[in-house]
Image 1 (tube, rainbow, N blue to C red):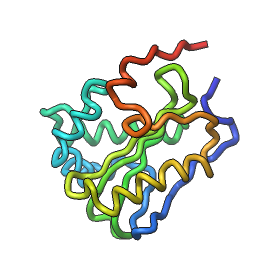
Image 2: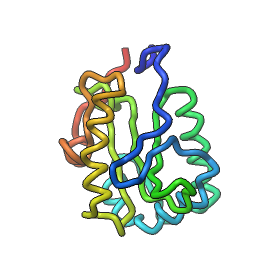
Image 3: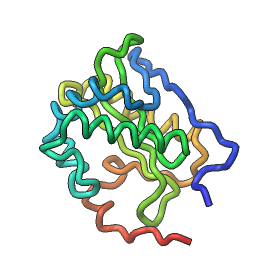
Image 4: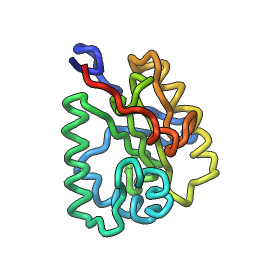
Amino acid sequence: MSWLPEDWQHPTRLDLETGHHLRPIRESDAEVDYPAVMGSRERLWERYGEAWGWPPATMTLEQDREDLAHHEREIEAHESFNYALFGDEAEPELLGCVYIDPPAKEGADAEISWWVVDELVGSEVEETLDEAVPTWVEAVWPFDNPRYVGKDISWKEWVALPDRRMT
């Protein structure tokens, strides 16, 4: 059984008030994703390391490309979603990501998290994303009880939750 309605179509873009936008990540984004991830690696590891083992310190560009190809296939299959944050239409620089995943833990019907590159922490862009993502999810996505990991619950608390039982 899918975690999403069979006929549901995922959004292909979210425009933010700052002029930034989100769109599904692609394998071809590796050249802009890799410097964003590795440039913010220590902070990302603090957030996602225990839960996901990501991003590893030794990750290569080719490993990142393979990871993004995997995400692209998951998006197409509606298994999970990774949206990339860009600042302008030319998309020369990836500035963060939003993850919308089926629940791995009990108590929610989706698990959502996001990050921005170190340079944008505490910025208007991050604040706008913090407001826009839950609003977007509520308005567009078919969830009744999404969990915003790292926002309404810490990653440490999330890791301690019981794993979701598959039925």
